[in-house]
Length: 166
Image (spheres, helix red, strand yellow):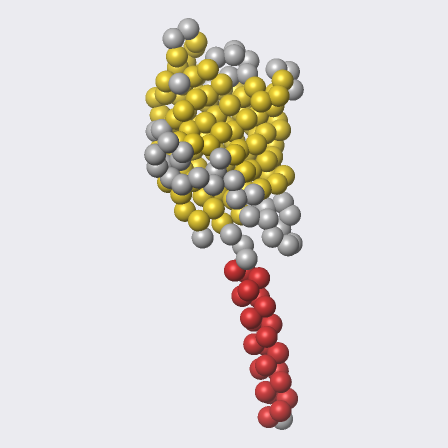
């Protein structure tokens, strides 16, 4: 009986160690922008916005691991943008499905809203430059293809103000 209890205990310990090591392989990353925008490009108007009344973004994602394909990712960027010669709009860029991630990039399907009207639905795009350190001049870009206006015609870019990886 003692030998059976010992073997059961030993098996549970080994299984537990494998479970903990598997959990430790998941790397979660996140970056934020707090009123520190760089540029928004509107595919439908062709305007390049560099003046903002609020510019915020939050994203988090996991590095790909066995059994997690594609990795989990979230992105949302919002801003009220205006520039001389172009109408001021409120923009909302949302990742609706991720297809691939790395430590620096999120690929997937994106929705782009302008003044709460869906302008580009499930459009293919990528966020990159996400692996850089926070502060200073480091920035990310989100390029989104528009089926009517062409590849990489939507752009949302801002500075990385904060990051947390664990």
